[in-house]
Length: 369
Image 1 (tube, rainbow, N blue to C red):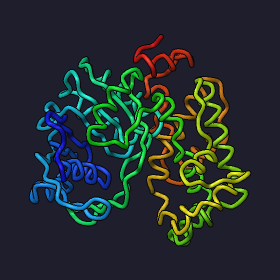
Image 2: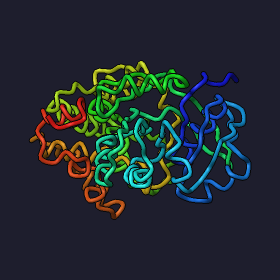
Image 3: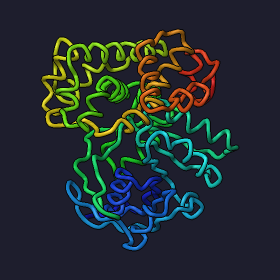
């Protein structure tokens, strides 16, 4: 495989889970200078021993890494691009870990940001006293579908064709995408971080389906088709109500969010007069089984990092979100966790007390207008 152009930026992948291993291994396989950081030694030790990551599936080969470590001091400062590939619940932790080692000119990309990721990450950096000129950006979704199959080995099932990326501030998005596209032509400029955040369709499908199918998941250990059997006409009406509330919050910020039905058509060519009809015509959902347990990222990540920020923004802007709030409450009861207390509220995103105009200005210019 051909290497990157001369002078290619140095990458550091933060997170050695499924997606992080796929990204680090693929970058190395392309000849990109890349390191990887993970907070736990068991994930890192096999990569240290082998010197890299072996990939199977859509990408095949051995990607030799420059370094694998649990010490951020060894890899952060020398990197030009920091690719954060952890569940959104880990963004705050990562921001605190990298803060002491950041320098001018670095780019940080959340893969993905979920809802409000870039706002929270930058707010944490500023709270840590970071004054370096770094750009925080977020991808709308994760580039890879991958699963680690053995220590230091990962199977890549697919690589998405197009991933919108937006920077905070938005005026620097083109700068970020120009750097990323030297190796990743899949990354394209997104409108702004409000758009990437509020077009988070996982917020619509995952939490509500988990809550409304809770008994079935527990009694069958997930032995049913999550979308094709888990979504009935009545459950689809709840999903549509959640979607309407999300779109209304976006509209209050001057953002035209894509509806769940529109997304199904764009992503899968699945059309229908109702959300239920569109789901039923989507062959991409055939055969996907439900999670086997309720202590799953569809709740512990998607509720605090996707639903809570939408509801919190709604409260700030005077947009009612009763269905979303009901799901947050029920999910919290189901997993005995206060997801609102853990979640990405406007306070945690650094948006408390701002008007819609000020939030838009912050997204575009990086400062409150």
